[in-house]
Amino acid sequence: MGKIKVTTCDIEGLLVIEPTVFGDARGYFMETYNYNDFKAAGIDAVFVQDNQSASKKGVLRGLHFQIQYPQDKLVRVIRGEVFDVAVDLRRGSKTYGRWHGVKLSEENKKQFFIPKDFAHGFVVLSDYAEFAYKCTDFYHPNDEGGLIYNDPDIGIDWPVPDDMELIMAEKDRQWGGIRAFTETYRS
Image 1 (cartoon, one colour):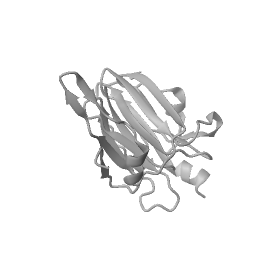
Image 2 (cartoon, one colour):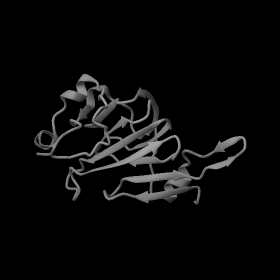
Image 3 (spheres, rainbow, N blue to C red):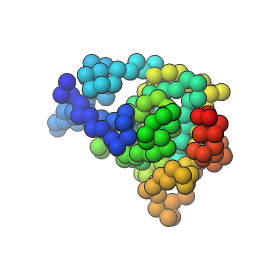
Image 4 (tube, rainbow, N blue to C red):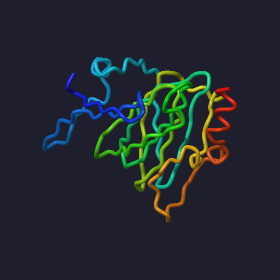
């Protein structure tokens, strides 16, 4: 090991990963994923799909999850900066309904490992951001669920200035809160 630094979060299972960056006058090199290093750090996931998105400042994507086909995700920012959030939806978890957020940027090169049964979303803080992530299951469009980003029962403290206009897909404005999720999926 030694090529990555893994930091636990206040919610069990969520991990922040910092790769070792080798830099010189030419630029830098880093491994963004190495199965052996991740397995040694307790992340024994087999990723089957990589995704990438580009968004402008104020775009809020999420909070999304897959219902029948949950995914572990390894997320990172390759350009710009986002505030990334995971909400614990694991049945029986002592931290059910709690959230954790982390700033991911091209400068800090941090990655965020989000296990199955978490809702996930992010807001773009820079003028532009490119976001990349690995998933352990394929995307199933008819299996998507979500939570409203500003649910007071979750209480996410999004670092959004008062003058920033949030830009969201219509579906992300329509999701219910965690109470509705609990009644529908966890009863």
